[in-house]
Length: 156
Image 1 (spheres, rainbow, N blue to C red):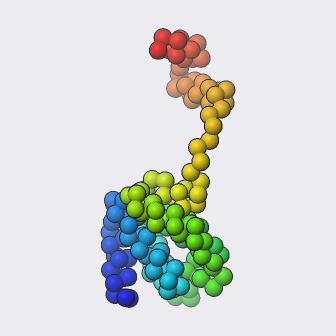
Image 2 (image 1 turned 120 degrees about the horizontal axis):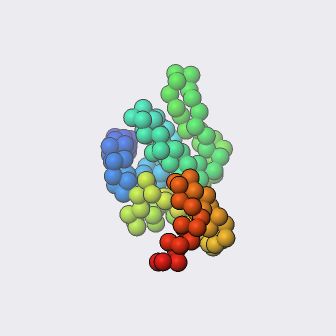
Image 3 (image 1 turned 135 degrees about the horizontal axis):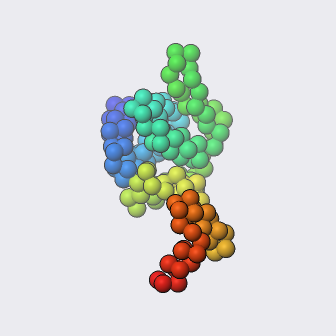
């Protein structure tokens, strides 16, 4: 299985250009981590993403793994390599199931995958006065006056 999981890691890192394909490979990596308890492959993937300059991808993987394995820690070994410590980690089965479901729905790691795994997918109710105040501030920075904005809204 070691060679197979290393192949999946390679495919994951290579597929980061296509967020949907990368999510599928990440699901396999995380499921393997859940069964084996060995974080070497995931730590290697995070390190490789960092070396490639994909900070967003590395941050997403760290966040997803941290959500699913509560208490896991990324640590630097004496040789300078990143390791994933699973000593105090507890598996959050619900978060793992959310990841697997997101993988089946072809959700991209570049999209809302992290929020989905964390369970933060509730839509907040629109606070219209607050939204309008922020819109006016943004438009004023662009040189559009409040009166011009109101006229454009009324004309629509």
